[in-house]
Image (cartoon, rainbow, N blue to C red; front, side):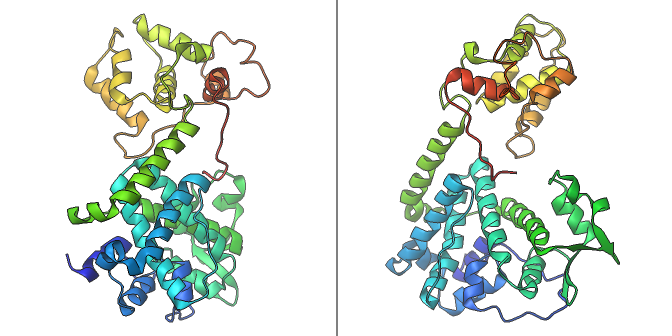
Length: 372
């Protein structure tokens, strides 16, 4: 793979703009540094003689490598890639090159959680920067993300199909299409809302591109930084794991899950809602699909093939995601699977089985409020 092809691979293939009413072709190096996923960023890098082989091996690009590592560590620690004020063209070029380097580090670790976390962090960073830019720039970014957008004297508009595609996971009623203003097939949005939709679009794109297919020869150059990312990832998972990174302790499980687990062990047929709750709960605590499958093997209606498929679907193994979140206490009650409530269950702060486990085990309740 040549330098140029490898460089393009690390940026991903970008499609042509759908609609940009106001022409916007001259992206300067400062703008490219702010939005390094733009195709202009790779062009600027190539024009400045930058290539991937030099990026991973030359001392001249040590600043870019350090910044690339920082991007990934920021994703783990803060759920948002930090932004530095860039004073010179050299600073801008290093910022541009740090983006493909970060993507190479994430790809080398090849962990689904890290992929999603990094994609979110880059998209949150972009969101924070877009609000400071003019509508013309925002529309250009939208086009790069395959979002059919219009920027004109009336502000920013987005085709309703793209709006639905990228806003569907935002649950607030304010985001429902029926509560928006639509004109000629385009949704009229405030800059804040428009940028928030683009955040989802960038997040989805980065997730879809990772992991990159890197040449084996890159491994030795990336080794030290990959180890730093891996250690940070393990520490992060341990910190935010309901078990604190330790083994699952039955004594810390909420009464509902103990009851469902006992039913499974005693060969009692479980309802669909009970199976889903138990599988998603155990997966959140760190059990893999095979371990969970073993728990259901004593059920009288056990079908290994069918059960394995259902479990892998719930845990995300089939879909390449992190899997489903266990149901909240209110949902457990709705389905009639909230059993044997104790005093902790009845406390005001109790709303989720995982919260129960965290409190009982002493790992505490740690929530990342920047996540979806």
